[in-house]
Amino acid sequence: MIRVNKLSLIKTKKAKHSILLDDISLDIARDQITLFLGKSGSGKTSMLRCLSQIEKEYDGEILFEGRPIDQLSQKERCQLIGFVPQAYALFPFMSVLDNCAHPLRAVLGYSKVDAYKKVDELVSTLEMQNLLHFFPHELSGGQQQRAAILRALLLNPVFLLLDEPTSALDPDNTNLLIKIIRRLKKEGKGVIISSQDMYFAQKMSESVYFLEQGRVVQQHDFSLDPELSRESKLGRFLNPDERPEIVPFERPEFVQV
Amino acid sequence: MDASLWIEFLYRTLPLLAMGAVMTLKVLVCGASISFVLGIVFGVVCCEEIKIPYISPIIEFITFVLRAVPFFVQLLIVYFVVPDLIGIDLEVFSASILAIGLCSAGYVCQIVRAGINSIHVSQWEAAFALGYNKVKTLFYIILPQMFRNVLPAFNNEFESMLKSTAILSSIGMLELTRMGMNMVSRELKQPLAIYLLVALFYVAMSVVLNFVAKYFERALFKKVKA
Image 1 (cartoon, each protein chain N blue to C red):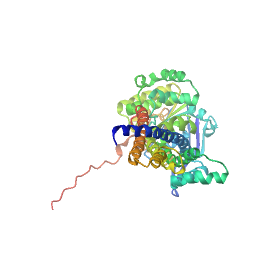
Image 2: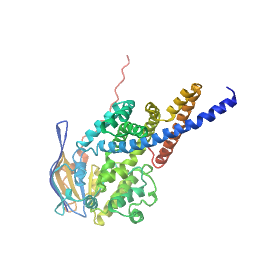
Image 3: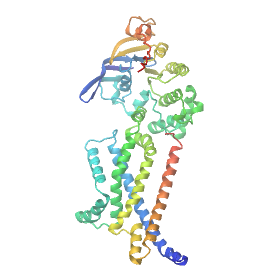
């Protein structure tokens, strides 16, 4: 289990402070899907960046099984948390195969043959068999994302973190991603997701944290209580019927001089 | 001058100019090696992701001075002043490669620094999340991308180094230009033909340098579309 204790993240630029995360405390269980929902700038990505230790200058503590996560070695950390950023960040000069095999060789010390064998073992679970020799720029957004997930999963992390995973996906690829995430959960992996995609959130819903201005304003566990009040903040976010209508743009009339 | 005299002229001048060209290439290769190694080390230390307190500002200042002082002045300092100051005997060749290497290192540092900074920070973060440390990230992920981005700038810099070797003639380095000057002053005739031949040698060396750069560019771009 990951325990987040009084986590705050403040960025200072030109003497102006900006609070990205404000005193957040929560527990994230293994073998469960956890969602951080909220509008842009609510702190979802900052939360994932702190959990993956990309952001280190936070106040408070993040513990894994009672051990501060920032005291883990590089090797231990990458086998605890796999992070897939919003832009996937595949290495552009490597094929998908090398993107996936290189961390195994450089970080875990696998030989080239063993690393390729390991990629082969896992590649079918993400339907990437025919794409291994392609370079990232030759893949679609969804394929790049699956390659990035495969690369993270090969290090066999306990938790997989996905930042805005559906932001560039069409409905077919979103459904495929949902299938993959559910399979990962069944295999005992914890999946932590940040998203503002309501369709995806409703499909995935398990343990949900709703963030606003860096604070958790509502927490709901759909596995314990499938009903959610429509009056709550999270309810309104997931069922946006009462959102203000978008006023159509009116073309200004041209005035003849 | 009839044809037989031209052939005799070329027979006498070409081998000497070729010797000068070989010496120019030797200085270029040695100077470029010094510049390449120092420039990469300086550039890496000065880039945004690696900056080391106290050391990076000092290196930034040194490279600024190397770029601010004209190459001819640096050459005079390295050949005439430094040996006197530290009491060593510096040969013309050693002084030449040291001066040209150091001067160019200032520019290569800026090329490398800009090349590394141009790579999106998400590449550093992705490597970090996968468990790479900074050194591994630099060698396996960042530098290969940096080389691809800055290859044309490297080509420019080494072309400019090739031209700068002509200044070495001022301290008596027997490279291509000096060889041509000696022949003109010895024979006191045909200066136009001799200097044209010298220019042709420089063009030929530039062509080779460009060919090598294009080969590397193609090899690196074959894998990745910009």
